[in-house]
Amino acid sequence: MDSSRPLLRHACAVALLLITAAFPHAAPLAQDAQAKRAATAPDRAQVERRLQSVKALIEGSSAARQIEASGNAEAGAQRIKARQLVRHAEDAHAAGDYRSAASLLDDAARQMFEGARMAAGERAKGDNLGGEVETRIEAARALLAAQKRIGAEKSAAGSSEAARQIEQLLDQARAHAAERRYAEAQPLAQQAYFLAKASIGSMRGGDTLVRSLSFASREEEYHYELDRNDTHRMLLDLLAKKQSTEAAAGTGFVEKAGELRRQAEASARRGDFGGAVEMLEGATRELVRAIRSAGVFIPG
Image 1 (cartoon, rainbow, N blue to C red):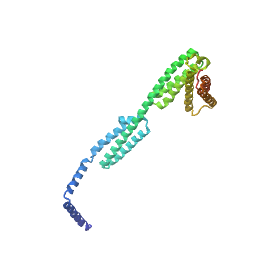
Image 2: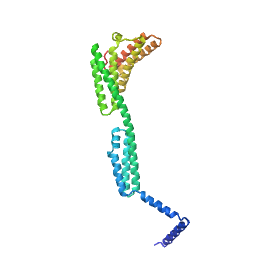
Image 3: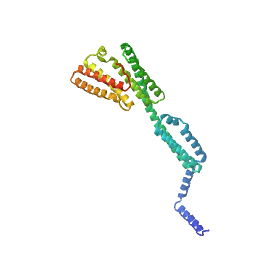
Image 4: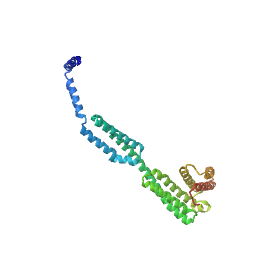
């Protein structure tokens, strides 16, 4: 045995006595701190209960269901991090390091609560979009009823085909909305709305039918035709997004429609609303041709 070890232990003991004599309050304070650490350190049973609680939070709680339902990738990543932390906590528990295990479990719970907060934000956005989609579906449905009525009154060729397309779009939009896939439902509802509106406008357009509408002035008629032209343009834009690009056959129609629209606006600025109306009617006819070339039929 090393003969220096007894001497080393003696020296340490002497040093401790000297420190205690110099600082008489140090020993009680050190003892108190050690006692507090021992009191606050979790034991095996506490960590085991905490493990079960956090596992239930991650796998079966309302927060877990909220994260799953939201489809939010960031919220899902928070849940994955929480699971990883629980596995590390289990390793620490198995090694008897209960303090580290408890700390890891607290971190896992925080990750889950943050994920639930993200999921709640995603759900709120989804609910807002859902409300917008439902409103647009109802508006399109009302326009469809009007489109059918006007088509019957005017005996307009192709009105039944347009109505059928609108109904199909609304059915698809409702199916997506029923499953809370509002991002997929929105463009379908928009297309149904603008197709119904454009169909009505086209059946009322033309030299004969448009004169049956009552306008207080040519300027008022001009603004009506502007709205009708805008409706067709928005419908065409929706179709272009859906098909990635406008149909090649419709490109010339769109360019001609744009030129006629610019001429109409120039005429209106000069106060020639009669000429502006005729040019806008021509522009809208070109858009109808472009829409038809994209595979969507509009009567008129």
